[in-house]
Image 1 (tube, rainbow, N blue to C red):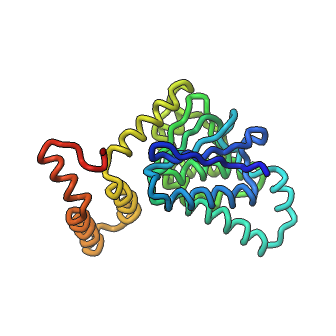
Image 2 (image 1 turned 90 degrees about the horizontal axis):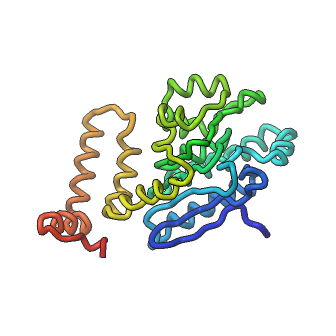
Image 3 (image 1 turned 45 degrees about the vertical axis):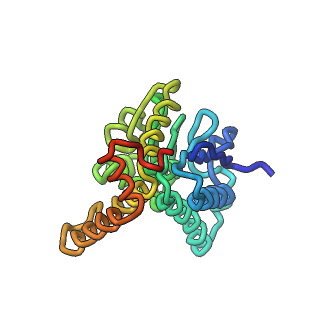
Length: 260
């Protein structure tokens, strides 16, 4: 049976590639289950330090598969709740992957595909890519992906693009913060590799802890509880074996042991 996502691991980097270019990598309930399982599996691997979400063909992800949409048209509310719950679980699995994640956006991203990009920690796109939250055009709303997309682009941009459903280009995606970098197609891999170089040179436990730190701190009121949490975080990492090794390596002007 043809799989919708291909997993490869090399030198600490897991690459998960959406591999249905003939349908613009649109997803169905089967594809959602496969993506969820793939991220859950690489998230638990000790030989993985970073994850790249990539795609084949001219589109990164066109959202929902048309055949799946036809089936959904006859769903009851209970069936829709269960179906949307699986999509939400997939996005949560991507967003909470212990390893840092990078979306390698080689083509257009529409509707639910926007959630895939937004759930990743970083996103690099080619200049030719276009983006669209098209749900309102067919009488729907981008509800399940909203927490991740709004976190990426911000409320003000969301107020425009959620409501209008208009298409925007990579330069606009960069301006509103939805992607971190826009490059020529020939430079996409080198841009992703540049991010991976930084991720792989840092302390593995520190990177994972930083990812949790962002989730713990972002958008929270700066009160006694939050301050106490950050104090605990730095104390724990300083006392850890990796923290001690990193500081000693810095003071002694040598490479830390995670660099071999």
